[in-house]
Image (cartoon, rainbow, N blue to C red):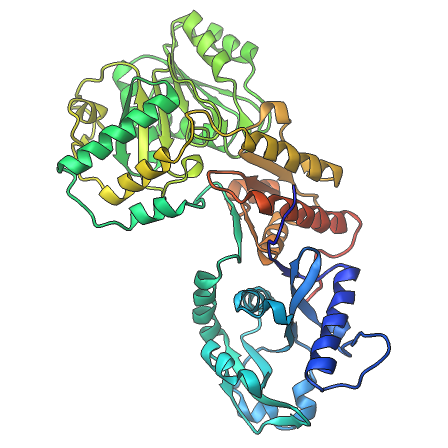
Length: 540
């Protein structure tokens, strides 16, 4: 697997990156802009390099763009303009942005926007709220468009004339958001959600809304239900406008109708949330807890059922997203069948990512987002039995109202439904693509070869979720933010990940296969520097 022509934005840290920075510096500020004298080495070493942070854009291992920030006075601009502070707003934390250079073949705007966003995020984290720049007179229109304000006289000469300018934090927050929206290859998502959507899915999402009572809408409902049942093996599925939490509340309501003791199994955050659902609904249940990152074992489930012979239902998570553990549904179904218990499953992160067989499952939940590649907002409850209306349940959570007619009982979003229909129609098979298994194995192999610890064994994990154990000498927040600067959005901000110092790489829906290799290389590089005792990135 290769990363092809993917652009990677990051804070420079490797010796070869700094060597290439000096070479790009030379080509730009000696050969193109005659600001410095030529030399035989073909490298221009900035005198402030040791105290400067460089954002770089890398393509095929080559630095094709750079931008730097420095917060130590005197700035280079201080030597050119002696009364700099008199032109600036008072009470600000200053930094100087310098050495913006992009190879001529990459001056399309994409690299520039990525560098500005990357160095801007660094400055925000470092606490700067005003940035100075010496803008070349050839690009003043561009800098002004970004919000830079000119001040003082122009400086320099002999073909290298610059205008002193400054940019406030308040302005950057506005222009930075605009840049992020415009940057097509800026950050590649490896999140569990929201996920990348196909163009036809986005187009369906933006179509003109129609009434949820119209024939067109009802045809879409029928198509979606048919596709979801084919994907899962369930006889019926009900569509609710909301999240997976809502769907699990609907399951809780059905379990309360059984009025019998149950068993909730947990080996992670989302199993714990099922426990919370059951508790809030006042269900009578026992709990069986396994350590996070370990599987639900048959002997433990059977022991729990032996200890509570009156148990009539069992509720568990299929893919435990908090760890990546893929619990054995066939085992759970077999145990429940042999004991006469009804099996309920949370399949929110597994439906569409791995084969799911709900043939003999009592109730199961899923969502439109994540592995199905549609926008979040529609939740599913699968079932294989007829469900009666119950006046003891809240109307919106009464699955009997949903199942008694083909027409949804409450208002629904035709846009969300159309987008889900488009995502389901785009699937080539009801079986998830084998690419995800291959890609996950390749990714984990590369990470392990680089000394990175993976929480769950491949044989027990979902290929859609890889949980990385970050070494204790560095925080997962630090690693996650550095990867974001490098152009990769991974999961690290959830409380349960921060508490355990983990990050997660998720291969959900339309993930970028060509970005897996550079992501793996970036993560190995970050963690190897941590393990060897070096700083994660240059201190600001």
